[in-house]
Image 1 (cartoon, rainbow, N blue to C red):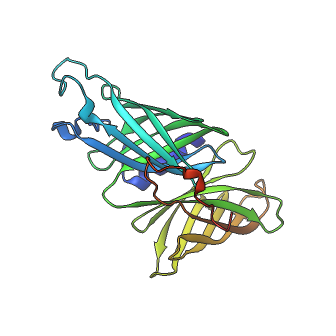
Image 2: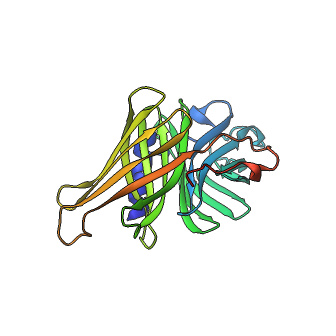
Image 3: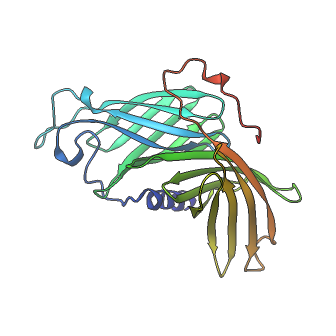
Length: 267
């Protein structure tokens, strides 16, 4: 159930539905093109900015017609963290709208979702620290990915989070050790540079509410406060704390020695 909620939230964030009515090999039924998707990959501990490129120009035999099946085409990717860049290789099957990628500790298996607008490739993965998720969109505006950590005031609870900002829309995924799945939050980016305001929320008046506030500065650092309020006494008691992190910079797949990239001071 948690995975379903996570994927539904990600699809809503990227403005997509669930009808598989086209694919990146033959978008809109036209000439094959090379299509790039940008998003997040995370195994709950290690998170990164995910780039997927479906190299549809490698499709042999041209565009499928009638009952003919299309051959799988080459797909490549890159997972960029604060300390490394991991190249991925694999394929995309246009008949099944399915993707398979792997590389140094990562395996991604996903599928295409499309409603005629922005397309999304999303699915499950296995990373260096175990199972996780990925979501990526073929978008008309830049997508910035941030990752970091959170703690409560008593330092008795901590975890990791990923945040995507697309235009002025914010999507947060938080991972708590021991929980069966992540918590997702939707929010907004407001104000003017260099210090912009982040607000996000999830919950329900009958159960609990989580509110997140913070600041994004011009250097790509983010941080702020979070508050958990139990609206039902059977839930965990009220809690609050802080969170911080940084922007994952763009790194070319061909970049040499990505391990030299220094982590942000807040980590």
